[in-house]
Length: 477
Image (cartoon, rainbow, N blue to C red; front, top):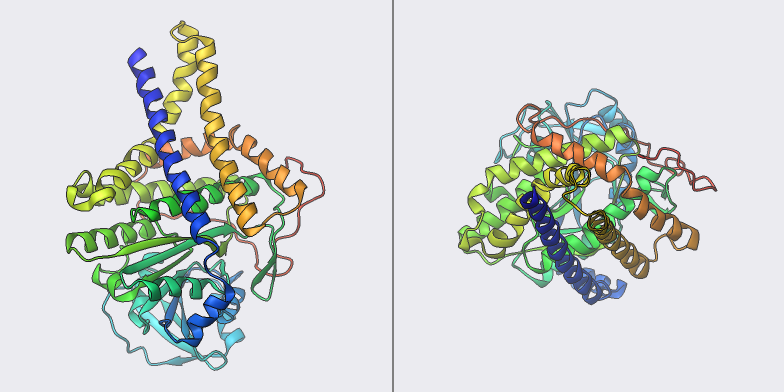
């Protein structure tokens, strides 16, 4: 039992040290780069014509509640030349009908390049109102299959993948295009994805941020801040980033085609693609970079109810294990550099195995106390240390967001988010740890299963402002 205690303690110590190093490196990179792109510099990029055109790929399955506003928002992006390809992947609702009515779609020939296999394409429609809009109606094949169908039709050298329920910042493509223009080695660019819940949306643009009503949504604001403002920026500074969110990412199209597009036999297609891009370039000794920008590029709806959140995290964890197993040959391989000795081991030890160790810790501490194998003050010290570290990372992400982007500017909103960092430790964290543990045993029994998330309609009144009192309605605790 003493050995088990030492293993758990060593595990948490290693996790905290490595996470802090990555977070600190992310903060340093963020401070150094976040202010180096002014509006005038983006204007110069357009005037000097050094950008490359972009194909925006939008997979959609039963997205009638959000799809029209999403496409309208995409059509208003500040970028000289781009096309929008929406793929209705076996939708059984009004997704295509609403798009047809809103954008006056008409059928065209189904002939198109087929460099990647995908489910049968039934119709290809173009818009009489938006010259750069194409809608593909196809048999159900899943999100990855829909992206492969869109890649087949894409005609531009860069492709941007966007979730159908997401809104992109107007300058997002320009910021990403600048990275590609400045460095020919770049093959992929991601950016910070922020929760849309609570935002005031008008004309497909986020006009103002307001805290959502439910504590479950507020807690995810902190989670996303930790992940994007510190974690992913830090890994990207080492060229060891393994994930660009499926909600928003810009890729070099030919490189994506060279690795075979998206894998359709995993629910973690975004993670798998980035790992395969690393693998492809390193195994062929191709100089490359995969970058994460520390500025908000995209807004996406996060789960507002516990059932949807559990389903999402279960899916993410299953996708992680599918990717790790598929690329287990990268582990501790010198040819993969930091990826093989740091990033991939980190995913195995501190993402894949974390739920096991965390749940084991919750069980061991009371058992050891009861058996007299652990002094109460040591147990209290361990719990407080773990809680304090989690709070530190949450507050670090929150402070960075407030200082750089001035989001949630009112003192009340900031105090509510700080309180959310404490509440996260008392219920939601434990529930999600158990869900992630459960996902390990469901990797093969629920293969390809996504689960469902309740959507809210995007629009001026889609995500109402919070009530005046903080309350605890809808909390996970």
